[in-house]
Structures are given as C-alpha cells and as structure tokens.
Image (cartoon, rainbow, N blue to C red; front, side):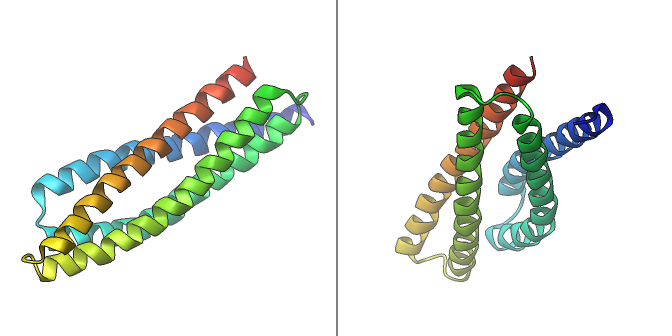
Length: 156
C-alpha cells in the first residue's frame, strides 16, 4: 500500500473512531439529562427522534472505522492480537444490532407505559428493559474501549 493511501486510511480511521466514541459519550450525557428533565412521554418522543437522527451518523462512523481498521490490519502479519481485534469488533457489531432492537422494543414499551401509568406489570417490564439497556450500553462502551486499546497496541 502506498504511503498516501495508508495515511488517508489512518486519518479516516481516527476521524471515524472519534465520531463513534464522541457520539457514544454524548448519548450517555444526553440520556442522563433527558431522564432528569423530561416527562416519560416527552422522553419517548425525544429519543425516538434522536435515535433516528443519530443512527445514520453513528452507523457510518462505525462502518468506516471497522472498514479502514480492517484494511490497515490486513496490511500486517496476522497474529493472535489481530484475531482478538476481529473478534472484539464482531462482538461489538452483534451487540449493537441487539441494542438497536432492544431500543425499539423499549420505545414501544415506554410509549405504552406513558399512556397507562397504573399498569404495574408494564412498569416492571420497562424497568427490567431499562436495566438490560444499561448493561448493553456498558458492554458496547467496554468493547469500544477494548478496540481502541487493541488498535493502539497494534499500531505501536
């Protein structure tokens, strides 16, 4: 690979990882702020709109990061570190898909709960779903950090 292509791929990788990681951190801040300042029905509407607006940005950033990282990874000798990096990236993609499906399910549940705040079974389902959503977000964050660390170790 020519040096100019390598530098271009590296720049795209750093930019896309920055957008993905920064967006991820911003979502955490926005979620905490929204949960303390918005009523349940308003939160549902906000996150439905926010998710639809952010999904393409985050998806493009992640796809570009994985693609450029994969290309750059393919330029070096394959070793257990490269295998671990690919495995962590694959797990991140799988968990992200699960998280998107879970977020859509939570939107529906919260919308139902906002209409009937006396249904304790529905409230318990929303609460349980919120715990699972938090665990999924934490796992995605840890996998993101793991990929960044692996990338730095590989680049060193």
